[in-house]
Image 1 (cartoon, rainbow, N blue to C red):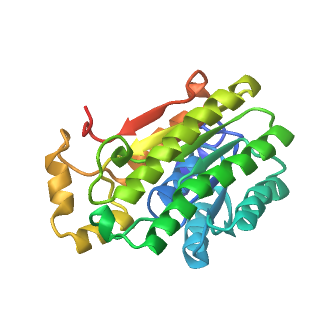
Image 2: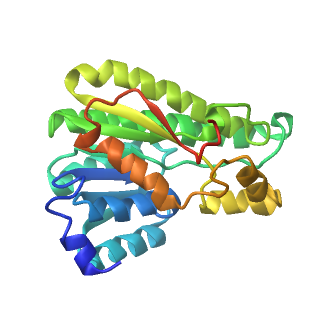
Image 3: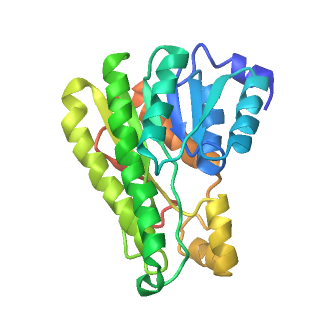
Length: 263
């Protein structure tokens, strides 16, 4: 990435002039999205739990000529989520778009082998977190930009049986329902709400799963018509389009970005 790639697109980019809030932005899909959104002209506020990761990505974006800042945020803490969203308004005076990408995984295995504590953590971060974030984001958009767009990260695993990640799959299916309900509720105000359902994506979460269940990436790729896993930037591209004005008539959709896995 070089300075030219940022500065040449900021005035005419897909997200030019927009203020974007991204959770889970310290690594993986979230970090790739922060870089992409900045290249496409957005001013970006990165949120996640790990300050060192946020600092590194933010500095990378700034070095490349983009506009970015960060805020430490724990999706399991309501006050932390609200404060993080409010920070975008404090810094930039408005909120236009939000990408609720932050999530936690679960130890892979049959559902009767998952501890209650792990189940509760998945629900707190992966269901309650997006609910809290959407509520805060809608309030911020209403108070400032008036119209806007939100994208939630679901999973292709929410669209089918998920015997090795049952709590995660259930949480992501709940995200699909929250997305549809929010789209129906806030569409009349000009606030669009969609979700993306990534397939196998080369993130830290996937590599951790592969370490615990050796061969899982190879197995998933064998079930994917494109025959490979996605790079995080390929998922970010779909989120950017849904958040952009080019998707102005799209709301309530769960967009599969899965290499054809569920074709």
